[in-house]
Structure formats: C-alpha cells, structure tokens
Image (cartoon, rainbow, N blue to C red):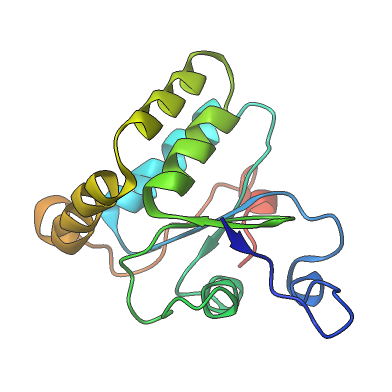
Length: 152
C-alpha cells in the first residue's frame, strides 16, 4: 500500500480533491477498450455502489496519479485510492475484486503468486492492450444512472 499523501499536520491532501470520507476511487485509462470493459464489469457487479471512477485523462484522475507518484501521461498503472492509501497494479485489481464480495473474494488467492510475477504479467498486458483490444477516441461515457459514480 502507498500511504495517503498528507500535509505537515498529517491531514490528507486528497480531501480537497475527493472530499472528506471519500469512497474508494478507481483510476483507469478512459480511452482503453479493455479498461472500459473492466469499468462496465465493475458497474455491473458492484451492486452496493462501493466504487467511484476517475479516468486518468480527466482532472481528478491526473491529480490522483500525480499525488501517488505515478505519471499521468504514462497509462501503464492501475490505481485504487482508499482513505488510508492506495494500491497499484495487481494488488489494486485483487483488492477491487475482493471488495465486490461473494465469490469475487476468491481473487485474494492470486496473492499466493509473488507480486513481481503478477505485476510482470500485468505490465505485459498493459503494454499491449491497445494493440490487442483497441483504443477509443474519447473516454468511456457513463449512462445517466451511472454518472454519479464518475468524478469527471
């Protein structure tokens, strides 16, 4: 876990960006076809509405990536931001899936694989996702019913 950025007094510097007591936020590549399918999958199975979404091409997504030391112009990382800190890449994916509850908690078994191996496979997929799955000209547009779950 990457600790939440804080000011000299220990107050989260993300509060102005996300508000106090913010729900978990998933920062995703909004023009990636695979990433957009992932978001649609989460919208379908996150029946409790636990997660919020920010495209890395938007203002909130860029701010969150930069706050955690990730390059907003290098869309190879997946970021999950929670109140206490953030998770990247396969740790983030496993945590998101487990957060859906039910049978999705079995995703925690992926932690049995060493993180360098998991993240190596993730990076390989991330480098090739546009070629294999395509790229959209614009970020994913949520339906009116989903719009409240997107930050930008």
